[in-house]
Length: 259
Image (cartoon, rainbow, N blue to C red; front, side, top):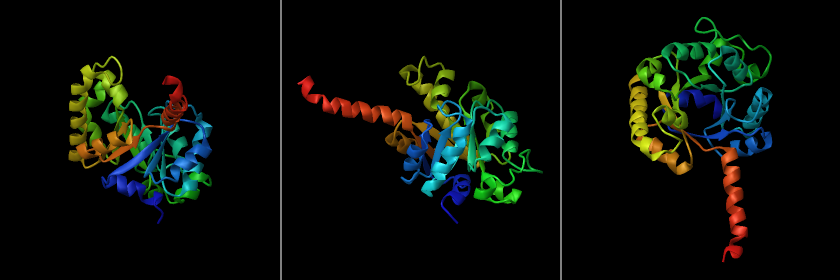
């Protein structure tokens, strides 16, 4: 069994996992990232710059590395978008802006075949090639992760976490901080409220026995969040690191001009 085939079991087992975020429509770059050893590579179909056809290329690039599991953040709780993402061979979906247990249940059902869900069997396309043709076996290797990033989601946190077959909740700290009154992401005045909310999320996930993840700005932050009780953490993104490294090298090249 390959490393990616066990991703769903490791996530559901609340093992500590570290992932990376892809926002650019750049399969060659995605393949390089996927060879580094991250447990999963998340592809952003909500805010990233790639269109839906790019999801397929991204999953091919992740699989080429044979080290990471590919997951896709879909644009919304729409079951059609969820099914389309999974048909690429993705090992899971991350569903944004989930506000209630009812919405979480819709998302979960969209990842499962009958009788547990509403997903259509993909047939002889990439999902079958990657995960097989037996619905129950496919469902066992696919995870549904819903995002906690609104005040409404916090109000219904325990009910969301108790959704049958939900594998994990995932905090979007930018949207959640704004929902808690931040003027901008990183607003120090909202930091206490955000930290309190994060503790509530990890505690609710632990009570429900599901995984709990968060998006982080860097590896050190990811390590700190894992130590606080999150079971998986995503590190930054390709587009962010591209800009950061380019800026660092430009500054180094011009260091003498500053002296």
